[in-house]
Length: 302
Length: 302
Image (cartoon, rainbow over all chains, first blue to last red; front, side):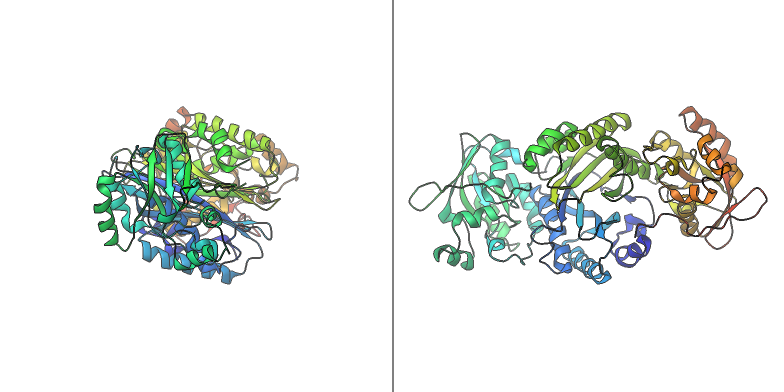
């Protein structure tokens, strides 16, 4: 099937107005006046733990959602996305049809449209899905990694570790509270590589240490059981990543208001620790006040 | 080498201010007031004829330039780009160092900066370079494929076919005349898949036929000799693509002014034919007034 037929059949229905039905060399987008543009990219390849394991519909959703999670971490509202597919020549058309269905469902769920992209062929067995997502924030309100200050609370947006037990789990990006993140968070990062690694990014850029209490980290019952039974160590759970929850720095005086407002959007915030002076490092203390030892802090892409 | 080290070493130096040194989940970009955003993507994979054949520096330039060419076809000025790399785990670091050098040189040449991206690993042998480029146009001035009208001249921005003789050739995108394209062109497309296919896109979206005279198509001496010697047919030359020149629709009364202004920017325009009523189709007439027969119109990606 030729590229243009593929595009017309599966992707034109996903294209927003500005994308002109994907008929031009590029999309023409109106950026609402007085908004900054937030741009992020996320690539997933065959060989990554989910692209092979998941049905194509869910694989599409995971690819798109990891980008939406990055937008949420900046406090940005989703706007549109570019989809770049490098597909093996022996790919079944069914795979593409299901993949497009997953995108269509998530476009509706998260209020985003396809602005364009490129569909190319690569050798049998290869497959690369690269998405660049655009979001919007009012000027100066984007939330960065470097804004944490001594005494800020380390906060997470939901239970961690479920992806470690269930590789078929589809994350749910926290776009619903992007406006609250802009209002209340001083720094933010999305947890894709594991809490110690990702919270560590806030520490590095803010020039602070973070001390987290294991007891305060929210875990689902399933994760709690896996730890209690010894099937998983807390370290296994924490470095797995793929949670696509957010880690935030929040001033103590703002936490209660933020928590109440987030709960109103269905998001349960948990304060799990504190930022303090010190070399950029995340320490996770157990119940006895002893630091957990991590052999590595998170997912290494290479 | 870990992803973060790679990013810091090779890509942070390429990042513009809005990309914050690639330290955040996303870039924060100020879109100049009263500009529309133009977004395009282009993916190249190992197995494509150039990614393997070219040294990494030139491969990087070809990947970036194919995007810049799409921006020029819209009449857009380059703004910034996202770089998404899926690299084999056995890639030599030298490859990446040279690849980054190519990008650095072109950022300077074309006035564009790296806003972010993603670097991921894939199986040995695979390699995918996906770039999403952002450009800017004053509102309503973007040039689309659907604007050609009966009697408009079909115009190209430079000699075609050299890529068919020299696969090591690096194209030179026509960004310098983007403001002139906005002013004078009624429709535009970049010639990446061959003249009949790409000019055909203008025909399809504009609902017109195009009649081109082979005699008027600008060819370099080398291409002309290859045709005269019989080493290549005109069809071989025209369907090869990879020219990254532009095909434009221009009102006859505007052509001379456009030509003079473009020459001032070092770009030689040639009027090669005319748009006329009829089913969307490109006909190339030889000297005797007989239409050339094409077995296919251009590069098929699948």
